[in-house]
Amino acid sequence: MTDYKVYENVIFGSNVSIHPFAVVGKPPQVPGGTTVHKPKLGNTPTIIGDNCVIGANSVIYQGCKVGKNTLIGDGARLRDKAVIGDHCIIGMGTKVGPNTIIHDKVKIMDLCNIAGNMIIEYGVFIAQGTMCANDKEMGRGSSIVFPGPIIRRYATIGANATILPGVEIGENAIIGAGALIVENVPPRVVMVSPKAIYLRDVREEELK
Image (cartoon, rainbow, N blue to C red; front, top):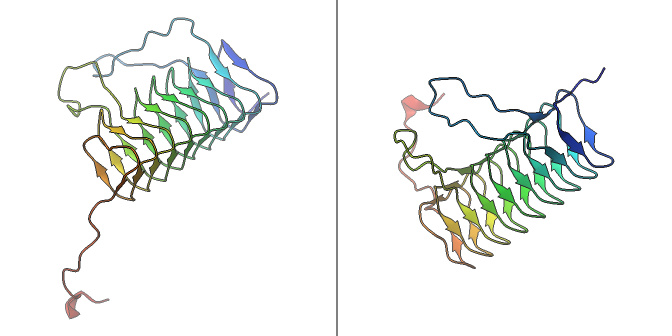
């Protein structure tokens, strides 16, 4: 008896390592009365490439495709029909949304939210805690089209950056830690948010 769960219609390559309590090929379930739209997957297979490592407590939903030599970190989540390339890292606790396409040699570190309907091109690096959004209406509208950000080749995203829906980050751009990206970023530029500023000294009564 294994200590992980594999659903039907999962295709494994050779030499795949699956760690305890991982779930592979999970069909998405949507309860009635929610604003989430139920995906239409039919009998779409889940495909895991050669030499992949699937970390403990990770969940890979039905219809995902994971390329060869890719690491899915402990506690990561790949939603339905996400596509991950070869030689990628999806860090611990990171979520990749549905229909997102991640090209080869992308490194996404721990605790990131990669929204649905994103494109992340070859060689991108995304640091810890990055948040990507794909719903401009923040759940208040009726739209069923949620365009995620596009991150072009070799872009680098600093820790705790926030990237809003539909934004495109150009090739080889660098986004500083904590930056809020609300509009397109041209290729080969460095974007940073304002640094912390001095306000006042700590008062005596505030000292511990």
